[in-house]
Length: 286
Image (cartoon, rainbow, N blue to C red):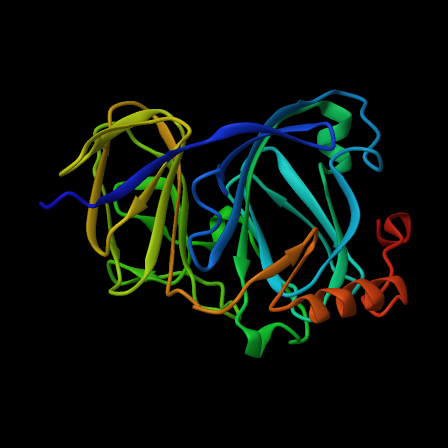
C-alpha cells in the first residue's frame, strides 16, 4: 500500500475561557483544511455536585457553519433557541447545521453533574458553502446504539456518509463522512477516502501503525491522501475520521460566525444583537 499521509499535525494545548483543550486544527502552519475549520479535543473531570447551569459552555450564537460534537465519555446536554433540548451520551453525536443562526448551549447533564465523572468530547467545525449559509438551522443527534458499527470494532460508529457498504444515519446539509469511537487492539480499521476529498484521522488516545507510513500516536492528526487507509491499533485507541469535498470559497470568520466577507459578518453580529437568532432561557427547557 502506498503512503496515505500528506502530513502529520500534532495537537497543541490552548485555553478557551478557562477550558483546557487540545487543538490539532488550526495550527500556526495550517489555517484550515477545507471544509474543516477547527477541531477541539476536550477531556476533563466533572466534579460531583457541580451546578449544571454553570458547567460546560453557556448560551452563545453561531451562523454560517456546522459545529459537531462527538462524545467519547460522559454526556452533553444541548439546548438551543429553536426549542431543541436533548442529552446525548457517550458514543453519540450532536450535529448543528447553523445556517442563518441560532443560540445554543452545551453542558454536562444534570445527572453527570450530580454524580461526577469524566467528560471527553471532540468539537469539529465544518464550513457551509455560500448557498447554505442562510439555510434554516437544523439540529441532528444520534445515540451510540442508533449508528452502525464498523467491521471488527463494535464501539466505532459511522455517523454520516458510507463505508464498506454501511451507511451513517445522519443526513447533514453538506455531505461529510464521519466515523469515531474506540478501536480494538490489533484489529485493522480500513477506511476509503473518496477522490478529491480532504480527510483527517485524529487519534485521541492509544497508538498504532498506519500501513504505508508507520507509527501514529495519541494527539496526532493525519492529513490523508485519497484512497484506502488501514490503521492497526497496537493498544486500545480512540479516533475520529472525517472526509468531505473542499468548498473552495472565501472564508471570513469572527468569533462564532463564519461567512464569506466582512459585510456578512457585520450583518450576523447585528442580527444576533437584535434577537433574530432567537433567545435561549435554559431553565425553561429543562
